[in-house]
Amino acid sequence: MSHYHHSAIRQHVFNLPTGTANTSSDDDDSLEQYKNNYPFGPSYVRTLVAGQGVDVLRLIAASSPSTSDATNSNNTWLPSLQILTTLFLLSSCIPKYIFTETLIDGENTLTLLLRLGLVFIFDDETELNLALDEGEKKEWVVPLVHLFPLEIPPLADCGSRTKWRRVLLLTDLHPNVLGLTSIPSTNANGTAGGEEGTVMYIGPDSIALVQHLHASLPKYLSSQSVSRSSSFKILDVCTGSGVQALALLAMLELLRNSNEDRVIMEAVAVDVNERALRFTEFNALLNGFDFDVADSGITCNRTRVCTVRADLLSGEALPRTSKHRSNSHEADKATRLLEELQKKTPKFDFLLANPPFIPVPPIVSDDAALSLRDSTDAANTPRYGLFSCGGSSGEDCLQAIVQMTPDLLANDGLLAIVSEFMNPPLLQLDGTVAMDDVLCTKLEQWWKSFSDNNSTAANGILFTNVNALTSEVYAERRAVPNDDKDLKVWNDHLRREGINSVSPGLLFVKRNGDSERGSRLRVEPRLVPSSIWAPHNVVAVQFTVGELTKLFH
Image (spheres, rainbow, N blue to C red):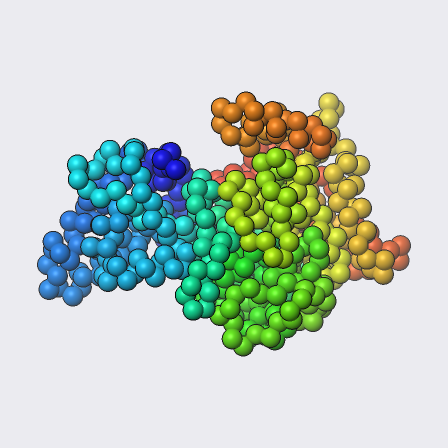
């Protein structure tokens, strides 16, 4: 592990907020300036070079209670805040001695963070210590999680007095960090409970769905049937830290507050990973969306957020493995997922998903990861874990979600998926896109293949980049850098799977009632003129909004 370098010390990526959520929309100049600075929270920036992070930590240590005026009660908490900000907001590791000596009750706090699986101790005898003086301790407190501030601007037509809504999301760090350690789980009595799979970090795909959904949501809500709704039910599949469900709840909350309507909002968050559900529950509480425990294994209350543990590939709702739920009476064995969901909400107005989508070669991932693991396996996959393995084809979870949607989506309900798409539509020589695209046809077949009794009719749009990645370029990006053997594994695997190109994309589907000819979906491809996931891509957002306006009306 001597090659490990953490984000703020070496070259990896971390997140930094770009603005403040306190800007009110009646201040046109400041609001416009903020909009131009990409309103959805963090940007991805290059980190400090080696040594600079340590210099920052020396400044923190210099202002600690032991070296500053500790008699001023207003100053005693500031160094602790600086330490925690450096650790969890800036994703920077901190020398253990600085942490324990600077933070209030440092030793006990460190013990608690270790027990909760929020940090780990790293002992590096090589490069990380070159910037330190001779004789300084070599143990580092390294964060396993980071706090991501997501700023939600007011929706169009929300009113001039509507404030911004900040959503704070705690989730696991980038796999460059997590791949070199394991995530400990904790039993109710504080003892170690083995290892768990890591939870999806906040990446450009996470933000892309939030950004494009936010921009198009007013058009969807203004449609005649939707505008009369007094309640919204949200299903977030492969929820991870709950980002999609909580972001949409925040958007709808802004709408409700601006109209002073009594709109009921509830979200059900589904994931196979127990750690992901705990993140979602914590983030719900952190943002004022409470949750409670129900006997069925689905947690829900009047304030909107529910969680369900399930394996999409088997279609089973699984018992929760956490032992802190003293009120729960979940069954000892798995039950059918659709039945469990429909007990609480027969139909959902929104179905959101950011599923695992990487077509992982079996040689670089264990069989359990490729099949989303069975219900008893909790091993941590270093390179490709629960949140990224989409099976050999990359489409295992995508297919399962599309297949179950007709049974769950309400009339006029909206399905929104962010994913990488294998063999996406391509621009033809005459500058057009084939309407009978193979991928779109596959999505349509999945829609009608799951339920013989379903007769839902729907229309959708598949957005992908006009310039898709070739399989060779995609293999280079997924393989270990400068590893010819691993690159060959990827190229051979993609060739066997028939994957010739890959593109990031978004899939939107709106249900239009029932069909006399049985379940039917019509998906049309649209090629975005630039990168659809790029955080600052106003052109891409305007393009998707224009096309979705036609879909919604």
